[in-house]
Every structure is written in structure tokens, then in C-alpha cells.
Image 1 (cartoon, rainbow, N blue to C red):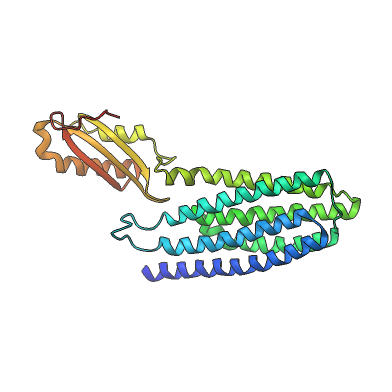
Image 2 (cartoon, rainbow, N blue to C red):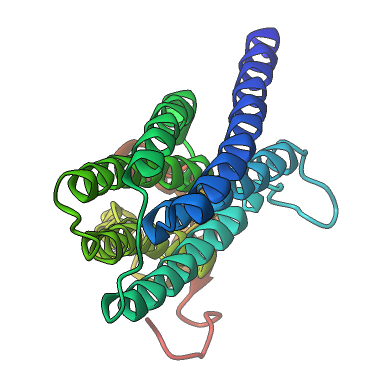
Length: 297
């Protein structure tokens, strides 16, 4: 099993490395093509593509760091490195989209000349590269917000390339130069929508928020369902990373049941795992007389 896991990691790393190389090459081609053709949409696609390459580099580095074992400093391990990378990638993506939208609005008032042929050919090459990169990262994106952020970069860029091809074709046929900044606005809006959607769960995990698929009141009810538990308070539910959920709670027992506390706690942990899939639980036992005096929650 360890051998298979290592092979899987190596295979994924090779995919990310290849994706970085072809995206950097594409960025150069698109920027040159954008300046030669006068197309802001093509330059927008190039800048977005550069962010794709950088996001893949960041995703690759975070993926490496996340594999490090827990130590005295990082007792939960390094898995959250991928979440930090996802936050940086998604935030950067939104800022780039806002900048492109601003530039597009400026061009609406004075649409420049655009060479449609260059736009179509370069965007066609970009579409092939973006689709290939998205395919390389698709499977890995299912299990990692970090890789998903990078995958969304490429998916949005592939759709952007389609829009740029359409714009270049219409400019060739009808000289509708206004479509170039309009397409840029559309690309920007699409990027912001996708990035903002994944930004919310990333921030929630980093802020120690409760998982979206876990009901805190249901967890409390599971703990309180044991007839020897008289009260449950200071219940905290959060995600350690994308795949591990942790719960902390104080449970109140009677003085008579205090000697049975180890068995009761073991049963509570089993119920948490069985009913909610929570395998990391810290349960503090109290009695009415010795319990904490802080406000109950």
C-alpha cells in the first residue's frame, strides 16, 4: 500500500510539473499574440494563464509540504498548507479578474483595432493547452481544495479561450471590435463567480468553522443520548483539514457514575464515529460539583 501511495503521488507530481511547463510556454505565446493583434481579451487570457501556471507551482509546493509528518511544532500535521495555497490562489484569481474588468471598461469607450486572425489562432492553441491542463488536474481536484483551485484556474481559462475564439471570428466577419472588451468583462465575471464559490469553504476551514455537512445540534444530541450524561456544554466542532473533523466537548456525569467515566467516554466516541464519522474527539468529564463555572454553550 505505501508503495502504491508513493507511486500515485509521483504520478500526480509529474502531471503538475508538465502542466506548469506548458502553461508558462502558452503565456508567452498569448502575450506576444495579444500585443501583435491589439486584443485585450487575448492579453487577459494570457494573464489568467500566467496565474494558472503560478497557481500550479503553488499547488505543487503545498502538496509537497502537506505530506510532511506531524511534529512538535505542527502537531496536527502540515495538511493545511494546501488550504493556505488554495486561499492565495483564489484571492489572486479574483484580484486579476477585477483588474481585467477595469481595463475592459476603459476600452468600451475607445475600442482599438484588433487583428482577428491572430486572436483566433492563438486562442485556439490556448484552448488545447488549457483543456489538457484541466484534464491533468481533474482527478486530483476531487480530493483537494488546493488542486481544485488550480483546476478551476484552467477550466475558466479554457472557457475564456472559447470566448476569445468567438470574439476573434466575429471581429473578422463583422469588425465588431466592441466585443473584445465585452468578452473580457464576461470572462472576469465568470472567474470571480467560480473563485468566490470555493473561497467560502476554504476560509471556513481556516477559521476553524464547523463542517458544512455536520449539524452541531445533532452531534450534541448524540453525546446527550447516553442516559448517564446529564449535560453537554462547551461543544466545539471544526475541521482540522479537508478530510478530518474534530470535536471537543464537556460532559457532566453524576458523582456515582464518575468511576465509570472511561467506559462512558469510550462509548461516546464510538457513537460519534458511527453516527457522524468523527474519529478525533476530545471529551472532558465533569460533575455538577467540579464542573467549569463558565457560561454554558
